[in-house]
Image (cartoon, rainbow over all chains, first blue to last red; front, side, top):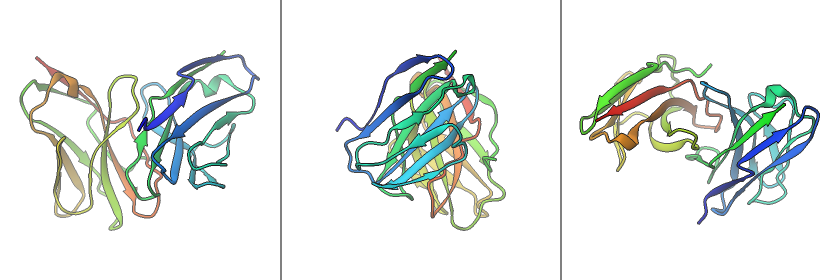
Length: 112
Length: 110
């Protein structure tokens, strides 16, 4: 199993541009989530999904959209990038909402 | 609002036990204590979790006080590769909203 994979590893955007961060898992996990991590800080939950077709907001959802059309994929969309969205983004998955989460390697995003 | 308090940093000698404390005085009866670590630039890695009883796995031991208001993660024989930021997280049983705080930066020294 590849586990949780994320692409791209690194991205530079200009203010106002849009992009999608990809996350995929091959463990048949129902629960997936997105976090952001700013320098010197812990992770903050952006959005999560308890299964295909179901998503919900976390602690810091503004400026981000998600969808979950398949069990395997959980993309995160930035509609209009802002410098405040410069961060490292981590995707995670687990077998259920109450189970241990496993994290991907992260995507480093720089918004100029 | 991570609901936990950890020291900012700690040092440990290689080969010795590393004992990382965590205070969670407002923990509820349905909340687990989780420990993750993050090695530089990598995604967080699950270590161990517990509810009431002490737990042990191949990576570490988790000691939870009887009143559950604090816990200690023990790495029995720390190696240089254990240098990382260690997060103590209190998580409700019914959801997976894990609130990471700033964690403890553990440095294992030769």
